[in-house]
Each structure stands twice: as C-alpha cells, then as structure tokens.
Length: 245
Length: 288
Image (cartoon, rainbow over the protein chains, first blue to last red):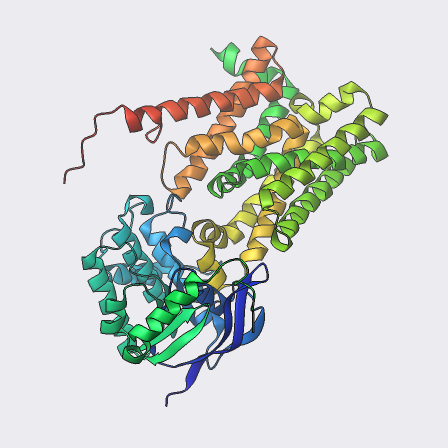
C-alpha cells in the first residue's frame, strides 16, 4: 500500500552550475506528510522547484510514480508573487482550475461555484471581487490555499506556508493540511518553525545542501543532527558551494 | 464647434485615414502595452522599437519606400533582437535588460548607418517619426490586420499571460505553456511596434503603447477596465492629437504622443490612485 510517489536519486540541483542540493537520495511514500527543514540556503526551496520541473537537475534524477507532473500543486513563497498586479481574489483562486479549464475552455457557472466553495473553506467567503493588493498577508495566504484546494492534486508542495502569517490563519491552514493528509494526499512542506514540525509532521527531511537526516520527525530533529546542519551551513563559502565528493 | 472638431475629418481624406489608423493602433497596441507595463517591461518595448530600425532600413534599401519590404524587415529585426536577448539572458550571466540594451543599441546604430549612407535625412526622419497623415490603403490594412491578429492572439494567450505576470512559478508548475506564451507575446509586441512605426515612426510607436496603459493604472485596480480605459485613452489621444496638429500646424506623430502624455500627467495627478488622491486627501478608514 505504501508505494513511493516521489523519489530523488543521487539528485544534484543548482544554479549556474553551483550545486544547491547535493547527491540527495530520498523516497516519499504516497500519502506521507513530510516537512523539509534546514538552515537558510540549505536548498529546501530549490528542491521544490526541481520537483515541479522549473529547474533541471545538474545530476541524478527526480522520478514521479503513478502521477503526472500536472497533478502536482505548488505553493510558491509569497515574495515570488506580484501582489500589485490588478487582479481580483476570484481570478487568483480560479487559476486552480487550470487543469480542467486550460487556456481556452469555458469557465461557466460550475467554475464560479467551485471558486466560491473554496473561498468559503479558507474563510474568505465574500472576498471574490476584492483586488488582491488590498489583502493582508494572512488573507493572501488563505487565497493561495483556496487555489491549492481547487487544484485537487495528489502531491502538494508548500514553500514556507506559515512564514510571516498571523496565528489564526496558521491554525486554519494547518487544519487544511491535516484534511489533505486524511484524504491520503501527499504533502511536502518547507518549514522553519521546528515546534510546528514536531506537532504536525510525522516525517522530516533535514537538509543542509546535502541530506543530514531523514525519517520520523523526533529522530531527525535530534540536537546532534540540528547542530550538524548548523555547522555545515556556517562552513559554506563560495568554495564550499562546489561539490567535493 | 463643428468646424473645430469634426470638419477637418469630413473635409480631408488624409485626416480620416489618420483617424482610422489611430483607432486600429489603439485597439491592438494598447492592450499589449497594458501587459508590458504590468510585467515591468515598458523599457523592453522601447528597446524593441529601436531594434526594428535596421530591418526597416534594409527593406527600404532593397525596395525603396515599400510597405511590404519595410514591414518584413522590421518584424525580422525586432523578433531577432527579442529572441537573442532572451536567449542570452537564459544561457549566460547577463541579465535580460542589459543584453536587450546591448542588442538594440547595436541594432539602432546599424539602422541609422544604413539609412544615412543610402538615403537622405528626409528618409531618416520619415522612418524615425512616421507619417500618420500619409497613410495609404495598404498601410491602413496592415495596421488594422495587425490589430485583428493581436486581439485574437491576446484572447488565446490571456489566461497564461495573466498567470505569468502574477505568479510565474505557478504557471510553470501546471503547464509547459510558459515559454510559448512569453515568446508569442513578444512577437505580438514586435508586430504592433512595426504597425505603429508606419504611422508614428519607430521612436513614437512605443508611446501609443505605454502612455495610455501607464495612465490607466491610476484609475483602476482591475485588469479588464484597465485595458478598456487604456484603449479609450489611446484613441482619444489620437483624435485630439490629430486636431492639434491640424489647427496648430504641429507634426502629427508628436502631437498624438504629447496628448497621450498630457493624459498620463493628468492621471498621475488626479486619478484615484494618483499623487493627490493618495497623499493629500484626508485619510479616513472605511466604515461598514
């Protein structure tokens, strides 16, 4: 039953030929709830970008089993989005229906209804016509989660979903993640708050350019491992960014 | 009143043609301009407008003042520069803006050299500043045809374009259309610049794209009205600019762009999101 949905084989990802993630071997089971943690610059976001295919591996490979790349839902960091773009909350959430509607198919009443439901679920009912530029940070994140809901994806990748978000929103969004987990969807989230990881995520991948530890969260987040990750990052300089293996 | 604002277009065929040309340009170029400004590519439009020059000049060299040859040359030169700079940015350490600047400067210099070695200064002025008052049938068909292609193209590209502007990472995660959308959009931009260059010249063509679009941003925060306001502003700018040039004997291209520029300054000052309304009005919070 526990079949692998996403596997990294000797994976190296990077920019301008400088590796940001080295020789990673890891397999994620279908239905798993995995936190990716590690110091700044450890390659966490890079790993997600590689998985959605916007960054080609420098070495090794990423394989998906039993799932098409278009069935991955991805939550980017808030900073990668142009919040000044003149677009309504409705239109942002409606992007989640891309897989059914594509570039040209009719949106229709059914689409309107689904967007409305998703907004109700994240607590933004009635916000349809609001320009996104007028939302607070927490509301923006709720809108992006509504978009994720509509994507109805089996593999969900979240890049820092709770960074700089108010606590009420964090609570509600955690509830959504738990719901996805119950629905047997696979969720992989990049996180910074280790208490959140301990309380919500059974499985953890600790990265510091390379894999430090992976497995059950309590074992992975041991003081030794965390210390090891921190020391590795302190040692990073331009030379250290080159692969030494 | 009639004499001032309508009679010139009733009495003179060249004024009517110029007005039709402006309408077609507004319909095609301004929506492109809206997306250029939203993608922070206004100056990219400017650079591509300059890049068109050597192609148009080569066409002129081969076939004289031939619409077809100059159009073809302009499109080829514009698309080449746009693709090359995109390619350089993706494969080297250079950023897209610096490579675009490099290519368009080279392109512009080549163009001016070609025109000046073989033509006269009058020809150079014609290419740089256009001849909206001398649009013939073929030129009007061309500009109208480009507007038609643009509107259909934008209808097809609309969703991917909006997503690419707002959240490029998301589009790349759900679809492989991102590069297709990007390059088709650049081709549409080049087509419109070439259309605009027949009427307004290479230097002014980008004005009818960017100024109304930039001005409209101060009036609305939603994309659809943004496009509508931009198109209306561009057309009214063309109409008023033509009247100005008729009554005051001003060169028509610059008169049109100046009118659009005046609307931009007005919007910047008095639009709901303009300077005065944002900074000087009493700041009361909204109450339910």
